[in-house]
Image (tube, rainbow, N blue to C red):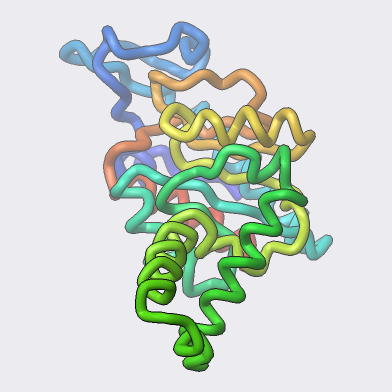
Length: 221
């Protein structure tokens, strides 16, 4: 699939960060500075999005699993709206260190989370004292923030899709260490190193992130 440059422009993919807030490693993807703000080369953005979506289509055909990561407020909101209903794995509140590099150990915490969730749902939690129930409730709230979107992920994903390569750099680094393919939306302040499929584009505007995310989801549907 090829993308119309005008469409990318209308969805604000070209708007980067202020000139002083950039990573020189992103220079190959940038076009110029406009009023002190970096503008992306939309041909590169279109190429990056196209390659990423083709890769995701191939994963879908092989029945491979992906994990979406977006913890910045506007991205988390879009993940809840678009990814969550699709029954795809996601992290939208905070990244738990070791999720990819220490998966077996983290999986024990997820199982504990699921057990607590079940006990609250079926009422069996009432066998404990009020003080114990209050503690378990706090545990559940914390665990839900960390594992709500990965509770059913029984093995490491085949690819990680990061919606902000700067904010969630730890997810990128863990995926690289775990030898998991990385697809990432990279703004002018990001470091593209280690990212297999770089989508150079605005990661702040909801319109831009939505456009990229919707196209990736189409490739997985």
